[in-house]
Image (cartoon, rainbow, N blue to C red; front, top):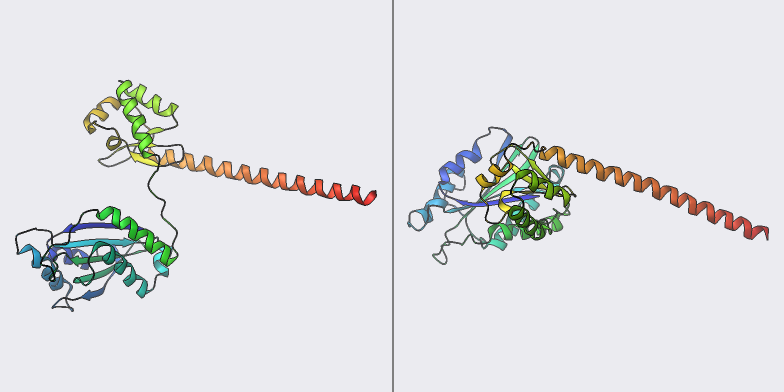
Length: 279
C-alpha cells in the first residue's frame, strides 16, 4: 500500500483534477462530509480551502492524501473499509470531524482513493499543523495493512546509515568516478542510472535501491555527475532484475538440495529400520 499526503490550496483546481477522467477508467465521488454544498464537489472544495485562505495565514487550506493499495487488495476492499482507511488517517493526523471529501479513481486497472480535509479548525480557530506528515502516514499505512489483512509493506532500508558512512568515505578518498564505482562494487554495491531528474542510483546486493546524491553528505548533484561523467553505468531496472534472478536461482538450488537431503534422510531411516527388523 502507498499513502501520499500533501498540503495544498486552490480547491477549484483540485476539484477539476479529481473530476477529470483523463487516464482514469472511471471517477466516483465517494463521499462529501460537513460542507454547505454536499451535492457539489467543486463548491465543497472551494468552501474548504477558502475558510483558511481568506484569513491570509496560509495559501494551503487543504490536506490531500491518496490511498493506493495493491491492485488485488484494493478490489477486495469494502465501502466500509475505504471509510475506515480515511478514519485511520484523520485520527492520526488530527482531522477528526473536519470537512472532508473522498473521490475514487481507477487508473490502469488500479483503484485508489483521493481524500481531502479542511485544515482550518472551526472549533479552535487554528490551522491543523502538517508536521511529521510522512512519518505519521507510515503509521497509518501499517495500521490499515494489519486491520485489512493486506500484505505488509517492507520498512525503510535499515542499512541506510551504514551506507551513508561508506558513501562519505568513498567520496572523500576516491577522487575519480572510476575509483568511486570500483569502491562501491568491492563493498557489494552497484552505481546505476534511471530516467528522470534524480537519475543516479545505488543498489545493494539484496536489490534495494537508494538515490545516490542525497545519501552523500555535503555533495551536490552537479559535483556527483561531474565525477561520474563519461562512465557507462548500468540501468537500475536491469541491475535489480539480475539480482532478483540470482536470488530465485539460489532459492531453487536450496529447494533441490533440501529435497535431496530429505530423501537421503528418509532412505537412511528405512535402511536402519530394515537392519533392526533383521536382527
